[in-house]
Length: 114
Length: 115
Image (tube, one colour):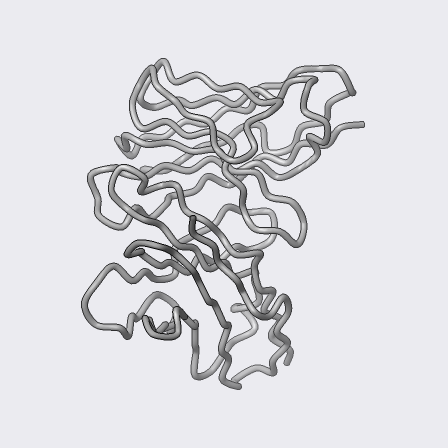
């Protein structure tokens, strides 16, 4: 079945370590996104990519980095510069040719900093 | 800039009762509106969307929403809820086009359906 696969589902990190969250999609969507979700808050955009080898910062990009070397893949690295990385991270995609831009989400990755 | 306000953070309701989850938005351009549902520890899935045309939009699981341009609202309704509707609901707005995925989300409404 087509969809978005995020891994790992749960991840623990010590302070000062970088971690990379994987996001793979087989929907043939052009655009991919990373959102952060904190309890009681909506989703906040970290980075997005409309096309391979190109990406833009979202509203809360500081302390994060991404790459888009393949259409199917959009990994997110949470660096040690991110002050409060404990959160639920959601990857999404959308076919940028589609009017309205509904998002298709993965199951999420929960990162906990010990 | 666009913004979304979900007027209720928590909505408790008894099974088989009707429910309305309220959403107001602001934007300087024409927008597209969405409602997503999130079950615990899962991603979001689309319930329904308004792009254009009829202001009454029907979605999955018996939900519907009405777009009111003059009141800048997009309230979600269901005439009779089930226990399985217990979840977090998010209203979102997007400008579409090349900014299609740059959706702005509300803070969410937790719907709790009690037996």
